[in-house]
Length: 218
Image (tube, rainbow, N blue to C red):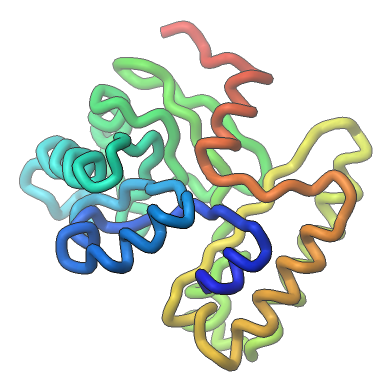
């Protein structure tokens, strides 16, 4: 996956448990070297509603990633897309500016919190290799076919002047498998060949969105 994305000039958002920085520094370091955005995915893969003190886990996760990269993450994905009724308030207070947990289709929105508003960015759960391959048990080329069918539809919809966001989720043990990577590459090559299409990480999408639609007042 890294070889493919480096070759295509793609800098993705890498959503990682902060513990990766401690346990697998070579892996995290390779992502950092390639300029990938580090998005906090808690400290380890435990649901937020199972934590005894989720605020301390949020703070620790951000601290570990900032220590490793030199920059605090601006985005957050909860393990398994989990949240409690307090998670968003904790994240905003800790400085998080966007989340990807709400499985929105193709446009960001603002969410109010007790502190600063947080943007919810699209994270499509059908253009997602865990869903396609581990849950629906599709054959390998379905990742490419579904991605391109999705693109055709939302690309046509942009004729109304409203941009669309297409979120593609990949995991190394699925999309990076030798029998799938060819189709993943073909999907990205065809997507990027479309006029007007750009490949952005979460921070780039956030900055574009907040420039178009400023955050609501608290």
